[in-house]
Length: 385
Image (cartoon, rainbow, N blue to C red; front, side, top):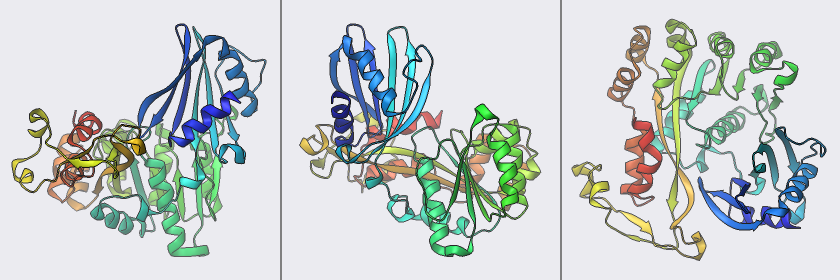
């Protein structure tokens, strides 16, 4: 019952993850709400083994195996709102640390229209999704909304084309089952890697292929080749800014001329906390924060923040909204890629060609009162380094 209550509390808070670990003489239970870890409760230390055992049973993990990392999934019943869990148990010097990702299917709609992207980003993305070949990349840290954006892109393609298009995915793991789409989960323990799966799936006659992540040179080479041979390939790659994806792929020994020919665009994503609609009110950012807002943007700014209420658990924020940047590859940018210019030089060219940066779009959200300047700095400052 205790574990059920913890999961129910996390679900009620709309948490994405539940963290349970021993801290000294007690157990700390924290939930990641709107991207920020929040302490939920402290429990007696002697309950740790029982809690870990319960999660092992729920996720069908070996109960006799201790001292080794374990990963599994669990599908909960109606008493837990039918949420799905991805359970990770990791041994530490104080015992097991349990982290469970929570997927609530009731809250998930994969639709470009509900992602709340900037209008220019949505229109640009839809234009790229009309292409029949090439590589479309999404970049950003873990938990920045890349998977939701890719799933929404696939659903948009299916809604537009119906049964006339064949779509296949290779993922690790498959987070949600999508209708009319063939989804595959890799299994590295049996040498079923992204590269092996992608090479095989090319023989399945797909028009659209989604690859969960480009992690290594072999996967990168196959994905680029697929984009050049009549497939629309959608994938993610870790990079601080959109232009950095090209540098990352060149470092994987992919020839610049192949990147220039195959990549259609790169979308960078971050998620910021949204001001609570129930307690939002006008405010004046601190002088140190206000300095980062260009003077010409301050005049019409509608700075707002949440004062904290029951609806937002006193945080002033409820839910999240994206900041994005969409780099669309055009001829001047292709020429710059062929010259192997630095990431900063590539970004400057993209801006000259009309790209709005993460920072610009994030500040616009703050100026419109959708989030705070402090939140923009918290989320996006690292992207500027």
